[in-house]
Length: 167
Image (cartoon, rainbow, N blue to C red):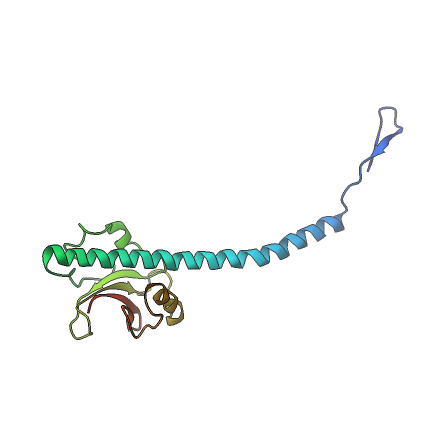
């Protein structure tokens, strides 16, 4: 594109401009690069939510052990998503009452016939996203042996996955 001088004559310097085709090619290239990069960011977000969940679960399990050490009892078996009575002094209640980083709500269980005395875990009750066994196996691998049927992190019902605090 050349400019005209004040007298109407062409200036000696001309600047080339981008054509519409060149601009469209650049937009397509940026779109292709974005389609490659965005799924990697989504996977990183999924991995970080699993790691945060595992860290919170460990913290709550350690708090349950401290509660037992101080009071002689594990946290009471209560309603899912609600802090068990007496446990509020050992944990951040806002974290317990919020949706977990992977969906679902926190829960404390005491059950002799289930093969454990106390457990802390997640219940997928329609709050947030519900996760399947494949997803939860990844978390089990962070905490334990990667098998939801054995170890300290187990699936105890269709929608419940718990860290066994005391066998």
